[in-house]
Length: 112
Image (cartoon, rainbow, N blue to C red; front, side, top):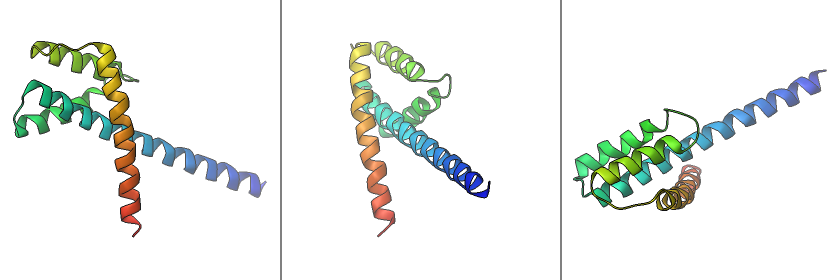
């Protein structure tokens, strides 16, 4: 029974680590997409930082990306920036890959 318990604990620990990694990558992605949108809206560096944080916070409203997409689409439209949901989704995909790369690079840097 001990072997089973050990495997169960190892699986649970791996699951928790995987969830934390995904959370960090998604938060980083949201910050990057917030910076991208702020640039499109012509915000100052201070406004950009605040806006990127607001996009990260927007993701806590509901599961999935729809809350972030709604925020970005609404804010960009309000700033007279023409953009479609499909374009926003494409940027989310691009920024997800970038966030994953940055996260992996930070791991490589911390091990050296």
